[in-house]
Image 1 (cartoon, rainbow, N blue to C red):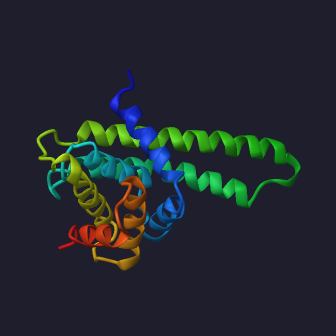
Image 2 (image 1 turned 90 degrees about the horizontal axis):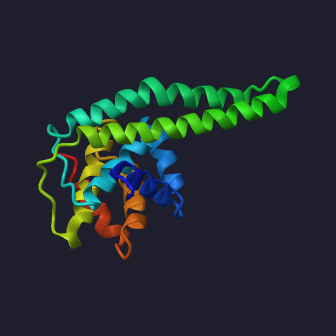
Length: 185
């Protein structure tokens, strides 16, 4: 049987591969310094019926994930990018192999970040009925993003809506946009 963290990781890989999602995720990451693995974990938790994150009740889960992202994932990513941009010419094969190992380490660190989130996620959250869980996912995404983007930025909302519309078949972008906006005060 696949455990919860493995199901979350598979969900994240699946969603990330869908049309337009990678670009939306990278935009959020570049513009706001957002952890995409944490964002996808928050969306998944809503869709899986784990409930709607409260700003204060989810604080620990989000904070620990963001600390891991800042202290472990960001340095791995920075090193990988540096090696890609400034490879020593006389060791190209070795540099390429090192970059591949750093990518694997970065992905492993992102899976750990999601595991930390799951461990710290409150268990007493109230979930919406099954057909409405996408609303919890939209809210959860907004709660995570607004920590890095405190004002309701249309670009952030649009990126989240793009991700959610791919995660939730048959949802119109306009409907998702309006729900995501509710996460900002």
